[in-house]
Image 1 (spheres, rainbow, N blue to C red):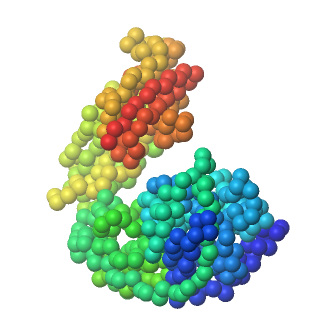
Image 2: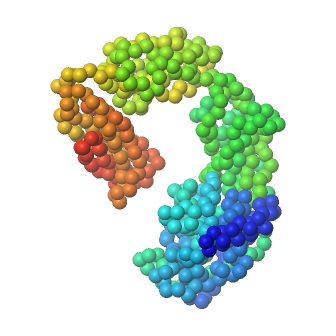
Image 3: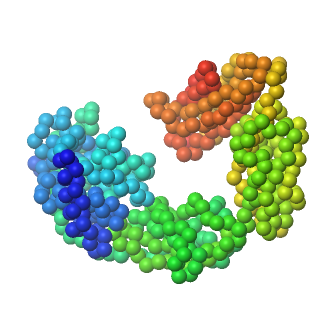
Length: 491
């Protein structure tokens, strides 16, 4: 109840300070003392547009001198410095960082502001995203893996050298500095600046054949912490098709949208920057026309079972199509050229006859539209399972599970894993099969495969481009069988 009352108080305070977002970024000075000796100031500015609740909470605590004499109780090189726990004022060191259970909590306010060097974030309990209170941290390194899990709500504008000094302090096994480093925070002003105007780079104005693979690119703006992309069906932007924010990047901003109506539809787009409080002016307006649409698949319906081994595939006619291209694979839906069992281009009909497929096998298929100038994106992938036949036995099917060593190993960034699913009956029944990648701590990194597979020999490709170098474990589980092996990624 006390937490609820305190949170309500924060909400009321936020309402009283709502003008922050219109006026600018509130500024604060963090005075730092190590063992009573002054070591420098860190000047920060907060983002009321991005995280109004967190900004209001922080400002309310500063107004009552809450942070004064609290400590930087956690310093991790190339990661963060963290402080603001009331326990660190007078409590024993082994309580620092655990907080006060009676403190007001602030719900998460995730955004596209990335946890880059100098960004301020809200510390919280590991198992509750809505448990932030007074503790905060300063990123001393680019930590984008925190995005979407922790609220970013401010930035250091001066004094990162002081933050690095604090970060390098001798510390104990739980990253607590040997000498207490106290903070004293005061509000010192308001940054009322307005961010500049992004310059659009691509796509060019009036481009055609736009697909979801097309990137929007524009120049960065000083002091921007996120960008707003707007796409509309009219030049006045009264009929908005999409409005989404994008994070700051090193260099030009490259944005990809998740959906847009295809079928040679005309749209208009523009971008503006936000500095955490205020939006700048819009960029110029450019136009684009979307690609012709892919056909709609009709038969067999998606996820059909018991389909004949000689099925007729059907799809709707796409407006403006000259012809179509059909692709099909079996077992699992990766359309690698080496796995294609059907790849037919120039089809002028909206149907295709297949013959002699395997029994009790999953097949995946897709179709695109061809024109004289370009091809559409592929349709969504459909899957069907062919009919089962009893008393079927293939002496060539493996009789035991087998997980081979990935190749190449070590690898960068791609490697392949080959495995076998055993035949345990005279019927080629499908078996739930998972191939999962773990780190050495046993934490799941990614699911490579999660399918029902019939007995056979399979090969999958693993893309490690988004993974750090290191040793990983990959585990195959199929029915009651399981095997694990190691792989090494070196970049």
